[in-house]
Image (tube, rainbow, N blue to C red):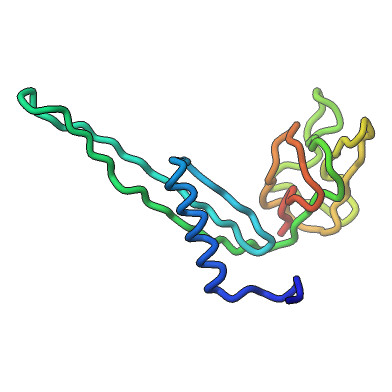
Length: 152
């Protein structure tokens, strides 16, 4: 199968169900997976209520976990990390960030720095538009190809 081929929806649903089962079995609070064209969020909720009269033995009722799946189509262009390193939103700790959500950028503008092997690499936007979302926080480690921000 070619990697560019889309998987049938049945395979995607089966994968999501398997992830929901992992969340349930391990009592996880939340699992979020970001793909190129969607975000999958699975939230496990465990409600514990203790309701026992003084004369009866204590009873604990555990509500079943609920797995909630949301898929959000993202509009706009995604700026991704071209290297592995540490994301910095500004040129120095005492300087303002290169961009904030709501700012307008032009293609070629510096939008962040990624430090890799003690080298500070300026990352330029390939797109012009408004910064709609920034996916990482200052000082976060980023992987090659990881989403950094969305520009509409």
